[in-house]
Amino acid sequence: MSRVVLATRNAGKVVELRRILTGVELVGLDAYPGMPEVEETGDTFAANALLKARAVAAFTGLPAVADDSGLCVDFLGGAPGIRSARWAGEPSDDAANLASVLEQLADAGEGLRGAHFFCAAAAVVPGSGERVAEGRVDGTLLAAPRGTNGFGYDPIFVPVGETRTTAEMSSEEKDAISHRGAAFRALAPSLAALLRIGAREGSRTPTPEGTGS
Image 1 (cartoon, rainbow, N blue to C red):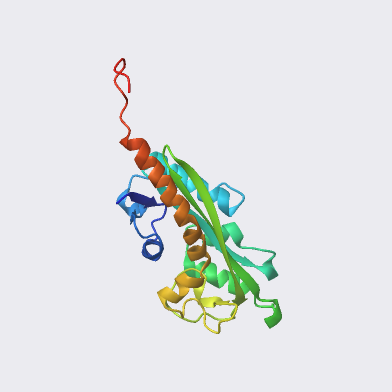
Image 2: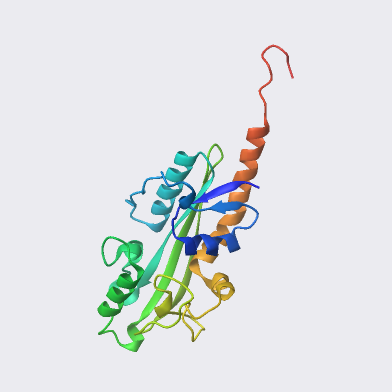
């Protein structure tokens, strides 16, 4: 089973993605404490996901996957977007980020609370290539948090067709509809193909010069 490094130290995200990326040994960056933080300088989710996956693959020499995801709020012109994880400033703090968004939505009427979660997932396999896939889920935002099964903005996000927040759903229910689940399910076949290419290349042994084939 191939070891694949997920570019995060968020234990909740590692657990979530182990349910989706089956057939590989998925580990987080806690297994590589010397890995430096990757500065997310990209201007899109896809660019940042690739930056992280490339950096982790280069540092570990192993296949790497990464995602960049966030909440895009209509009333805020698509913000916090790629700044979702640090919307309230540094260091990253889920509770502070959520409180900041709620404060900025205080004057938004019920019909102005549309939002969507977006995720870009990237895979980089040294010597084989790289791929990106995307996922999105639309919904609305509540005025106060509900639920404890989730992280980030889950407690205020109600997906279209639901009455519960994603923090009130079971892990399996959330995986089935989430932006991250959609992106990584779309990425999984490409990751498997890249790993097969890498395995084939790794199994080839050079023919000794002059012996023919």
